[in-house]
Image (cartoon, rainbow, N blue to C red; front, side, top):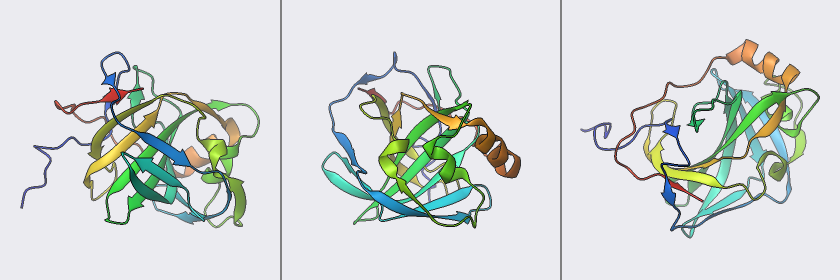
Length: 197
């Protein structure tokens, strides 16, 4: 059975806003509620499971948020920049399709909302406003790739926001000491289309 690696693009990739074509499709998020976030150890990262999860609409297909996890340093690069942290919002549709939103963070002094999502696993459940860790009104790069962890499932819809948010330096250092570096290397870019807008 074919793995699809030869025919389909694997993730992450180096992204460029200059090389991308304009969007002709639609993507929007709905995270405007409080969620209780439970943190568990995913061996290579912290799995943050929000209850309830949010919803993302991609080309009129609804995907429900299942978990948030992070990689340090970032897996994707945008215009040559590798961020200090990349958060993946993993969603599934009723048919089992996968969509992942990626948000980039650079270290900053102080405490920031994303810090709660990279706290030590087993920390007490915390209530968080999910939309505080998603850039509001940010443009995004989109393409079809794969999961960046095993089993590297392909045909994943990626929405990578270009606006970066801050992550607390102390929280990032503690996360990196436990799990970092936990980013997959950049994969070869095929002829598959990357869009931006």
